[in-house]
Length: 355
Ligand code: PEP
Ligand code: MN
Image (cartoon, rainbow, N blue to C red):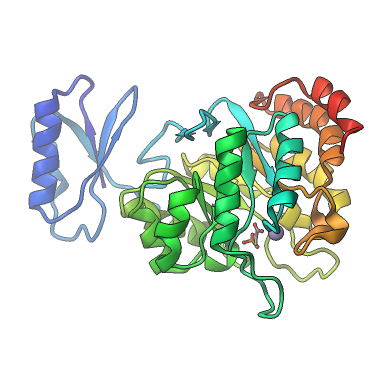
């Protein structure tokens, strides 16, 4: 259930409610929005009388949250969650954000080549894998910590925020030392120990959807992170498994506007894994933005034909440059702007010949 505080409730009243909730054996979750302050009483609510809470000083009402996910729901928090990265990029705010980079960090040269090209296009969030969850144990598994060091160097020299995957609870501390955003990959969406571990640290988390997860299972996975006290979670649709072998995945764009109704968490779309094909990434990027996504993750590699993973779905920087103007239009179709500057036309013109 949630306890809605009266507008203008005094700090001492809020503290009093928090203390009461703790005394009942719950860990209260405080959400202080501009319009209202809400305290989530989450857990096994049997034995708790909502009436008893209604009479506490400062309380306006007590409302049940009917959805099985609580902290992730719009009932708990009506206003969108906005995540601000250290370099100032905001995810979930008025502007949509483009995150791009190679599937895997393969070398310092490869990473800087693509990062510099992306920076020239105005991209301020670099996504690259150091630990790779590969279907085959014989496939390239990522460079591990040396890749994190390369990403940290990109961060320091180019001012880009870094998104990178963490595969296990024991690696959270290590990856958290280098990354701005910890990615939990599709295969790990229901690794509850990992979800709890990223919930206990302070970095934002990008939670990819499992290829077989329902929307509810996905939101409950997000709930594991939120319940540990980390409110900075974004959801990433990356395609689900269907009966159609034609494409790598079925990119579920229904879920984008659906999630915007169900949750306040930012919704990101990954058309690279969603389709598995470079020539479909452009149209589906536009579609995702038009559907209301708060951002995109697009795989980009300066030499996709030589990529150690996911080359077939990776754009070249020049492909992205050519795509950018239409992404601005797609964002505008959803009433949004893109965070990336300079203007795409200028960036496309100045970079098209260089990459
Ligand atoms: C990736 O982002 O490179 C990746 C492995 O994605 P997913 O977990 O969605 O398969
Ligand atoms: Mn990939």
